[in-house]
Length: 260
Image 1 (tube, rainbow, N blue to C red):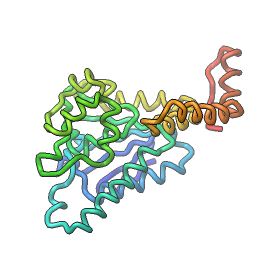
Image 2 (cartoon, one colour; image 1 turned 90 degrees about the horizontal axis):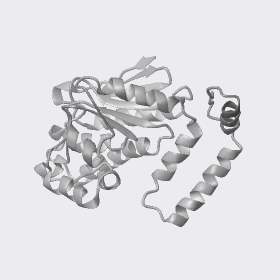
Image 3 (tube, one colour; image 1 turned 30 degrees about the vertical axis):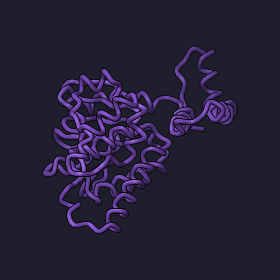
Image 4 (tube, rainbow, N blue to C red; image 1 turned 90 degrees about the vertical axis):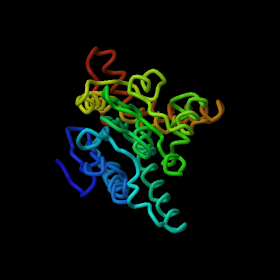
């Protein structure tokens, strides 16, 4: 199954939904239409029980070069505020998804493109991929949750450097500092992302959901996390998938999880 939008396409590959930003003439820049399309697709995926994991990528040889600057000129303060509110809806639709998200990055992931990639649970970067918090180059600050997601992946000091100096980070450096999880050959980021998404799709869905919720509470206190673990694990102990997991272990077979 596949569906299309002027700016974002969706294609289902088994239990994986692939969302592709498709604005190659502007190097997949973020426009209000892109944000709205991503929210729409994420909302549809949320209620599609056949989908177990999500891959986000860009058309052509670029993930996303950032915000569409042509749509930012001569905005009023109220228009700017509404733009950020729309961005927040997109961030929350991905960050609060109950299904794992993998990003496949080829080429540039600059500005809002970097912010989008960092919303994923796992990032695969091609060898020629590069990352940059380029907001300051046009007199802006990071957005789309970047001040939340970036320090979770790299140290606070390194986050300051990335955010304040707008330095370009290569794929190799990104792997070294924990900005991405995996490097692929050029042109193969999507293939490796699909393999990782397939592994996530085959895992038990309920633990993945609760794990995403737990990590989304960073930086919580130890007491908060212990309370959440008691809540989540208590639910899982009674789930059909846990019964299946235990049965398959003792029967020495592959488990079949249903998300129940």
